Image (cartoon, rainbow, N blue to C red; front, side, top):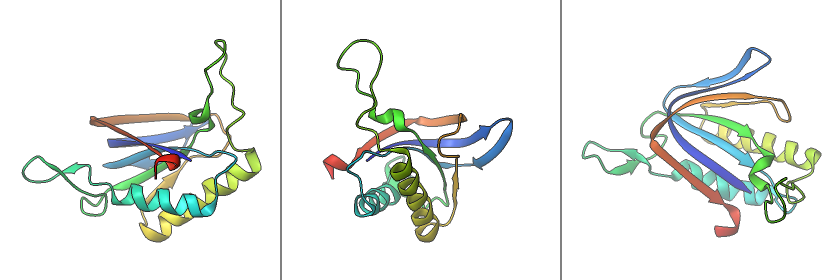
Length: 148
């Protein structure tokens, strides 16, 4: 499982001119699911993400987590995080989770974030989404379950 976490001043996701999710200060999280991923892996990823201390304190040090700054989450499914570009110029996506499994895990992650954190918006799995954001920093982190 891969999370690309961007610290944002604000972000939104739109599908067919309809805003599905909109947040102020917080994390925009792009979520990629692999065939081998499970709910247990998702639990570890969510715990790590919610604990990240990447907001500045009064001394300018990245010391504060999402809860401390009263931040928000925008969770977006993105199978392209498992693009394989080793051969040729057209990426392959064989490592990405099958749609049924990936959709179920994405929904699980959203429910877990809402239960543990509360302020979580989401996109629409499989839709052509337009994502807008103002990256604060810029500050972007890649969490890969293979590294946890």
